[in-house]
Each structure stands twice: as structure tokens, then as C-alpha cells.
Length: 257
Ligand SMILES: [Zn+2]
Image 1 (tube, rainbow, N blue to C red):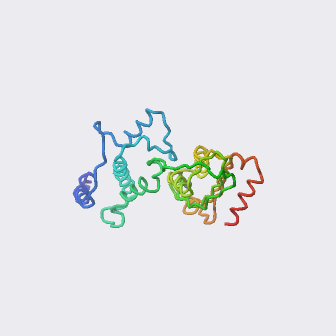
Image 2: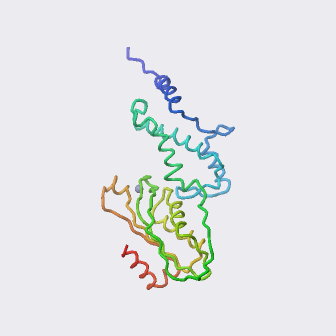
Image 3: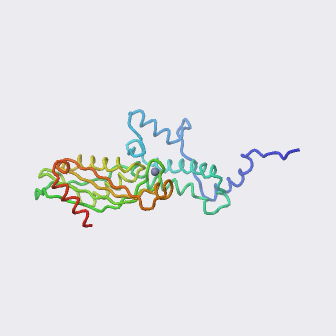
């Protein structure tokens, strides 16, 4: 008689229960209808016909305290991924809390720019009526590609030519805003465009220029495994587009760094 296969649910049940108390796992929050929190949030977004691509910010649809619930839900699903990868998270102490660590990393750290409001940018009037080229950078970039969720690490330079009427923002705010945009899965070409749009709306300058230079780990860690491949791209707006001398001045200042 062939050995009877135990239903998979009965085998790890005891162990799972034990580890549940040990790691103080919280059951993901569900609403009255028993819907996962992600579905509740998704429905709010769809009701407003808003977009929720990987590089979109959805903070307006998330209520206070819900991010913890999202961490719980992602942890539960990440645990299922580890199980499907046939990793023994019960006895391998290194992977015991990996699902929760990844969930926290995604929601609270590396993709946090999707879930939190835009940083407050205190604007101040251009009192000395500056209209000289201003360059901020290099600002360190930490992002991830939306194709593989592999890291993108690099640097960015922002050039601004303010008008006498421009509202200026403090230097540190360029870094804060850049970080907020980059902490989302995306592709580099779209990230720089989004940042340029945002700066144009905020500062209303005569011109904005952005250059981003980054290592894409999905080219280095996997795929072609080319360690030296980098991607450089730029966006030129307004005066930077029309005035080749200004563009040259900006690019020549970057080369000196
Ligand atoms: Zn990729």
C-alpha cells in the first residue's frame, strides 16, 4: 500500500502556530466584508478613476494607520512566495522573518514614495531676483526598476534657471523631492520627466535641466551581467532647450564634478 500523503495543511500546522506566537505575526487587516486592505485601497482609487502604476503616488487614498496593515498583507504574501521558492523558512533561521523584513522594506523604505504625501516644500520669493544658473547635485539616487524590482543606484544633477518671479525652494528640498520620486519602482526615463514636471510646477523657472547617471542592477546582477553598464539620460526644459549656450554651461559644470 503506498504511503498515504498527508494533506499539506495538517503537517506544518503545529509548527506554524508555534512560530506565529514566537514572531508575533499579526493577521492582515480586512474590512467588514473580509476584503484585504489592498483591495479596499484599490477600490477607492478606481472610484476616483485615478492611476496606480508602480511609479504613482497613492497617498491620497490611504488612511492613517493603514500602512501597517499593508505591511502585514505584503508579509503574508511574501511568505507564500518564499514557500513557492521551496525555502524552509521554519528551520532556516536566516529566512524565518524574511517575509516581514521584505514587506517593511518595500512599504516603509524603498517604495515609500508611493505611500506617503509629498514632502512639504517651503517656498520663498526670489527677493534678490536671482536669474543665474543654479546647479544642485550630485544627489544620490536609490530606486528600483519596475520590470524586476532590481535596485537602480546613481546620481542626479538638477539645473534651474529661475525667473525674477520664481518661488525658490531650499537646497535640501531638492534632495527630499528627488528621494520621494525615486522611492518607487520605475524606469529611469520616466523618473527624470516626473521630477522635471514637479520642479516646473513648483518653481515656475525659465528653465529646468536634469541629468541622471545610474547603475541598473537588472543589467549587472542578472540578464547581460554587464558590470559596467550605466544609463545616463537628461531632460531639458524651457531655456535649456532653446539656449545651447546655457545647456553647454550646465553640462560643462557637471563634467568638473
Ligand atoms: Zn529591470
